[in-house]
Length: 414
Length: 215
Image 1 (cartoon, one colour):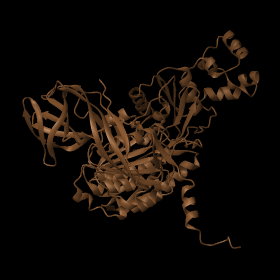
Image 2 (tube, chains in turn yellow, red):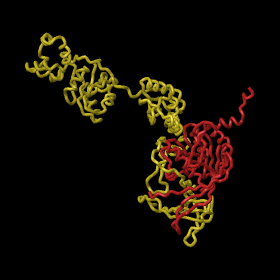
Image 3 (tube, rainbow over the protein chains, first blue to last red):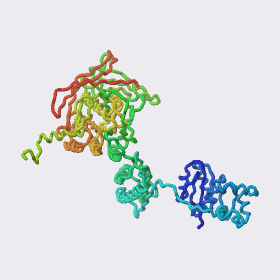
Image 4 (cartoon, rainbow over the protein chains, first blue to last red):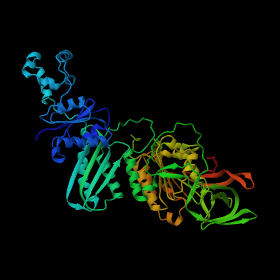
């Protein structure tokens, strides 16, 4: 089978990613990329069709540049640097190029121009023996270049940035946990190979081929790189356990993305904090019990609402030190009652005198309010909730709210 | 040779236990790391306010802390007003399920490295809390014994009992209001803090002020 190479010369764009769509052997060259597309004839068709496919992919990715498909790697590069647009150079074809493209020395070039030779087609018309006799045996390399015999062995120099491991099962397995041993083996292999390249990983993609001809895809991204197999295995088990595939599993694909290894450097007096692996596993384990939406970091919502805060389940505590000066002193804290307690109140002479709920009750000794809540004007209930701070029996202070549904004790001070 | 002995004297053991102990200091409150502290008291006794105050000291230092919230009672605005660095706080809402809260606390303590774990058991009927086996508290205490983690358990009544290294009981002395007529604001809570463990001392009087913000 004859060889076939493609070369793209472009000022920017994701050339390596594009080349990976078509080839395994890829060489990054100055200002472009050279890749081996031999064998694509069976999948795509003629060199012209291959060039068209590559061009379509270039357009899809917004890459503007010269593309050449040729049977010789050096020829592909030479034409890509000299011509614009898409060029397909057939094996026995000669497309003229300006002599400057051949990289000859200036004196020789001047002589050729003086003799009226401007392109490679003009040079090709002169007998080779005469040229070699005049310019020496080194000129053979230039003539080989014109004849598509240039010497350039494609040397893959693009660093791998991920490793894939595939495993097909003889029989489909319903329960993912049964695959843990197999997965552990694959995980060990990919992580070992990752470490062999001097990298670590902070992203693993798991694709499960299911018995019903569908796929279940999981992507686990961390905020730190690690090659700890046990940690990854527990995390995969927890994540897939939380969201199991809908059908039996017939094959597994594991893709391990490379990342720079973590540099562990902490100060002697640094504050105590859990290891990132341990924190992430703990959070995942707790999420499995109380639900994904109930574990995370509290965040404030900048709106005037009865509960103007939220829980960001996608975040983990950062462990960041605050350097701003602030006088730390105890401040009276509100606690919420979930669900709010339905309340019965007594009003005498326009004053709140008695409060009763199913759990407590008593005379109201002091109260302050009312404050308006729910500023969301686009809902029906905007500015409809009023709140009071109520001291009951001189012992306890609660937050009383009047909503469209009645009176409630929504929280208290503690 | 008379002074050499295989069995250590009890006084030596006490001394050894004291060595290497570190404390969290929040104002004049000194709580032992690697130990269980219990805050009990009725509603409006100031338990949550003081706990948030301790949390603010630790989280502002960059320590990661956790609040295991049995009844989803935590108010992040109050926490922020107390000075808590919310980005350093892991909040676990347990939806009123005691078993989930204890399991979550167990996982958090097992993770090691948390500066403080606050297990808030307020707002749940006593009959449910009575079902918690006492062994849980000893288990927690053993887990954090040689760590830097401070476990604070808050509730309406004492649950940890003898497993607690330090125990405090709070009660409201009075609430101070400001203003006249209908236009009143809660200004401060005046509370009594009674130390129950390691030894009972005279109650300490404390003031906790409110902080109002026009957001």
